[in-house]
Length: 165
Image (cartoon, rainbow, N blue to C red; front, side, top):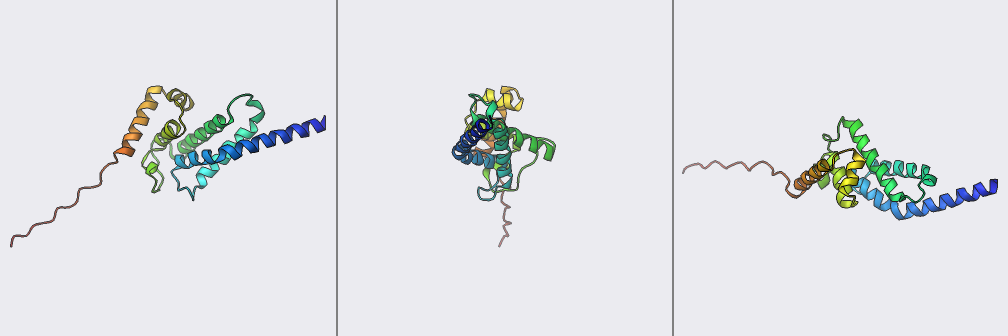
């Protein structure tokens, strides 16, 4: 009986290692997009990834045919949303101090944009994951895209005073 358990644990560990080898890079990139941190300095993204992978590993035996990538991505998104909520009181306020184009967006806008465009998650699935109506997800995604494609202009240049000669 003990040998069987050891064998199952070893198989589980190998399966999970193979999953991480194939999925961790993409999940880390998604987490980095969510946090709007630089690719080479992304401690929040790495923490999000670590926690999502730990939760996926803890649920590994219960996945039974579910996509482990989808499971990990859901945990990543939910952790990001909760972290933004607890840290700043809402998903709509805090923006990271970063040069990233995505830093212009509110956390909720980044989350929806990353799920929809980078991860290819359908509007309905995104809405269900975040507990929002589909129409709201569509509107937030459209607003985020408009912000990225048409950033607000800076202040107009000051006019030089013309001195009569």
